[in-house]
Structures are given as structure tokens and as C-alpha cells.
Amino acid sequence: MGVPPTADTLPDALVDRDQWVCWRSHERDGKPTKAPIIPGTTQFASTTDSDSWRSFATAREAVTTTSVAGLGFVFTADDPLIGIDLDDCRDPATGEPTAWANRIIGALDSYTEVSPSETGYHILVSGTLPAGRNRAGDLELYDRSRFFTVTGDHVSGTPTTITQRTAAVETLHTTEIADTAEDAATTSEERRTEQTAANASSDADAAATGVAALSDEELLSRATSAANGEKFTRLWNGTTSGYESHSEADMALCRLLAFWTGCDAARIDRLFRRSGLSREKWDEVHYADGSTYGEKTIDRAISHTDDVYTPPETKAAEPSTTTTAASTGATEQPPSPSEPVDDDTHSPTATESGSTAVTDPNTGAAESPVDEPLPAGHPQRMQARRERIEELTDRVETLLAENERLRAELQTERERRQELETAIEESSADSWWQLWRR
Image (tube, rainbow, N blue to C red):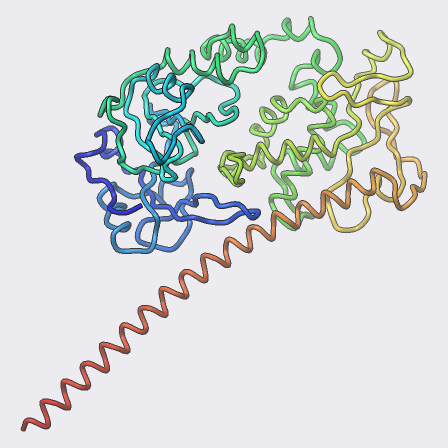
């Protein structure tokens, strides 16, 4: 990166906030990514833990004295700042932006700088970020739990200050990110109002069908009353006993929520945040593609859920031999869907060993499993194996990151020891010279 920017070359809205980290390149899944580092240390910083952030002056000093690549600024829910990241839209040889990037830069008209790769731009504005998706293609918008690398390589012709651009950001989100006509026609404020009304009013649910017609409270009541309700209740209350890690418990609850919600990702997320397992890690970015831990956990839970819950009242109203899950396209064969694969232990689960859960047609609750041995290559058994592999892969990634951190600390300690030994040798030589002169 070279010489880090000084305070007088950056907007005061950034410099005045103690939300600074350093960063260095880190390889994940064979791809380079940027890892936040606590200034003055070799430890990874967190984009949700303010104890790992420092002032601008401290972070800048660390860039000049330690082996990090540059400065980074963390966005939080407590500040009004929004970061817009444009990738692969600048010719590093000529410095010219693509027409797409030039249009966005002009529309936002706020502080803009060139990214470290010199192939993209970072735009900083203040305002409110619309709800819903925050990335599409080479465009990403952040307002919390993420950090921006800061180069100070200001784009000529753009403001040197961060300006209020809520309306412009809303327009950008609508035209570039919103993926349905309904999203495009709905502002962020309207979305929040609609979500609040949906959660608070049973009248809105009454017009829906199937699982969507059930309020969150009714759905939770049915989940806790089912045959595996004790397990659901333990996870819902935040109990992780029986699992090797908190992450495995997270996955187990998400698998159950996927079953009960018909694989509705937004509803899974909303319910999980109410559970006792919810923690700050849920919103932390853990993957090179920018996905948060929570997003990836939900994606994996849904991908391993073939069957979903169908309320008995829906079956009575619409009798058929095959019911299609509205949100996933998964089919549900009579008499009922099988239980999600259990994540409790390494031993075979009820589904894995061949037991199939049957739904009571009167209550909708799952009855005791009926033994039906499954062949070794059965899809449900294979799913359990794949999920276990994914969990182990995540654990290996965590261990590799920790190993890298420890290696860096070891290297730092070796360098310090070498400096100390050199100082002692020089001190000893000086003492000998003084004795000889006498």
C-alpha cells in the first residue's frame, strides 16, 4: 500500500471515530481475502467487537511500524455511514472507470477513493441503507459489521467530505440490487413498516396458506410440541450440550427451523435471532464471497432439507398425493415429510439409521419413528455425511486461521529475541573495549 493516508487527507467523519483496524492479505479456500488485524498486534480483529478497534492515529502508526498491508474502517449500527464497494470497474493502467462505475460515482457524489487493488472504488456516504439484499454482482453496500480498506487515494472530481445520500442509495439499491418488482417499488421505510405489521398482526397471516399462514408463535408452539420438541426446546433456549461446538448447535437449530418454516430463509433468520443461540458471530463475515456466518449457516441448512412441514389443516383443505413446498420446490410425499437429519452426535441419527417420522394427521405433530432400514447409499444418509464434512471443513478453516495467527506471533517473538541477543552482544563488545583501553 505504501505510505498510509494522513488525517488531513481523509474525511473527518472517518478520522474522528475510533473504529479503525489494520488489515493484511489472508488466503481462504485458495482465494486471497483481506483480514482485519488489531492495530499494533498480530491478532485478528472483529468487525463486531469494539475492543479490537483503535483510533486513527494508533492504527496509522501500526501500519508504519508493523507488517500489515494498510488501514481499515469498521462500519457499525451506531454510525450513519454507508460504504459502497465497486469491483472490477477501473483500468489500473489508465485510471479510467467503466461507464457503470462512473454513473454510480456521479449519482452518489460523495467521498470516493481507489481500492487497494486499483481495479475498483470505495464510496462513502451517510444515510440509511434499505433493508433486504446488500450485494449483486460487483456491487456491495455495507452499513454495519463490515470493514472497508482505506487507501486515501481520492478520486479527483469527487467531494472530499462524506455527504448525506439516503435517497441516492435507495435508488441505487432499487435499480441494481432489488431482485423483484415488489422490492423495486418498496422503500426501506415501507419494508420495515410491513415487517413490523406482519409480525404483530395475525390478520395478515390469515390471508396466507400453509406454513405462511401460521404466526411465528404458533409455529414455535407446534415445533416444541412435536415428537422431537424436547430437542427443539433445548436448542431454542440456547443449550449446546451434546454438540461438539456452538456452531454445530446453530446448524441443528437451523435445520429444524428450515423444516418448520418451509425453508423460508428470511423467517429462519428472524426466528434464530430470537433464540438463545443467537450471538454476535451470526452477523460476522466468515467467507471470501462476503457471506456472513449466519447467511452461510442458513444456506447450508436449507440445502440439506428435502422435506418441509405441511400443516394438517392445509392437507385437509387441499388433498393431494404430492404437495409442493412454496419456497423451495421440495415435494412432500404422504403421509408426511421425514424429520430433518439430526446433528446431535457422530453416531447415526434416527433418519440416518433408517427411521422415518410420521405426522399425526389430527395434530400435525410427529409421532414416534417407524424402523425402516435404509441402504448405505440412501440420499438421507449421504446428506448426513456431507453435512459432517462441511462442519469439519469449517473447523479446519478456523484452526488454520488460528495457526496463522500463532505463526505470526512466533515470528514476532523470534525477531524480538534476535534484537535482544544482538543488543547483548553489542553491549558485551563495548564492555570489552572499555576494559582493553584501561
